[in-house]
Amino acid sequence: MSTVTDFINLNLSAIHDNNKLIAEYIWIGGTGLDLRSKARTLSGPMDDPGKLPKWNYDGTSTGQACGKDTEVILYPQAMFKDPFRRGNNILVSDIFFVKVLCDAYNPLGDPIYTNRRYYAAKTFGHPDVVAEAPWFGLEQEYTLMEKATKWPLGWPQGGYPRPQGPYYCGVGAEKAFGRDIVDAHYKACLYAGINIGGINAEVMPGQWEFQVGPSVGITAADELWVARYILERVAEIAGVVVSFDPKPVPGDWNGAGAHTNYSTKSMREEGGYEAIQKAIEKLRLRHKDHMAGYGEGNERRLTGDHETANINIFSWGVGKRDVSIRVGRDTVKEGKGYFEDRRPGSNMDPYVVTSMIAETTILWKP
Image (tube, rainbow, N blue to C red; front, side, top):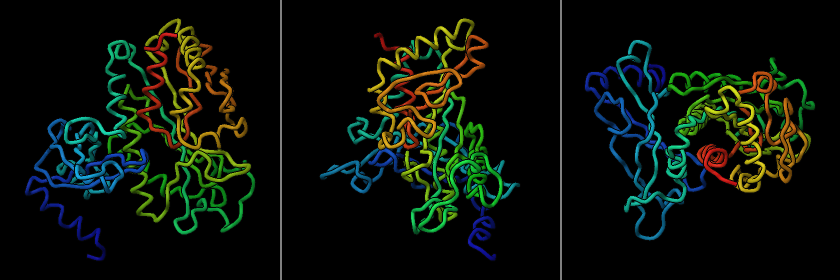
């Protein structure tokens, strides 16, 4: 028993023998971006989040309650295997650890103001939206920062690296910083059952991206939030800070976005390109509404430079990246497919962004 981890793994058989599991309840705190969690022991196995017990927490400590009525209730909504308490290979198939994503409600049963999943579920549950089976592919960019200095990982202390160019999808000690964290996160998400599509180093050194999806409806947002939680946990182990700031370093550096790829049944069928163009026109008409919900500080990123469109001007184009909406050349060639909303910032709430896109393109009548 050389480490604490050795001791924990040595005693996993006791959990198995007692038919117990550890459920880590995850929720979103008062800022709308801070993730919180706590664990409890349950009898297992569990295969349905609907069978998990509700739980509660002190809302005054998370900025979600005040006064004498401080209790916030957690309603389990989605369940994933826990990559941190998984044990050794022999025990993985026998011991079922879970992570639980929860909605938060006050004691009267009303959703609290940070429970954006509740409102997203209403949109995705609408019959017209269900019929269109919206698919989302979410590209989450983020920056790894030194804990002590809050300066990007791999950058000279108090200084700047070479200009952008060699870092995007780069390989080598002078180009890629934090790959061990990124790979650990990738594998942990796969273990958890998240539909993670891939990873890559981004344009700014110390900046990375992972992709979730394609996933149907609200599932994409559920998976992105849990993937963010797993990333924070992996970075915690490494002693590194994860930043979702849309423009973590001012100047001639790319910002961080959360490009949202989207299609509906109508767009994926023959003649879908016409449906795509109609959807883009609706997004143009509601551009200001969408920008208000696409992430705080996004105006520092959407300047018209660094592969972005200007925040105040809606635009779209085929194969372009300095636009609000990008349509791929394959989509035009095939006459059907998807488009990419390049406006969301890296700190966006995926429940807000995905439900807004679905509501505008499917339900909204100009």
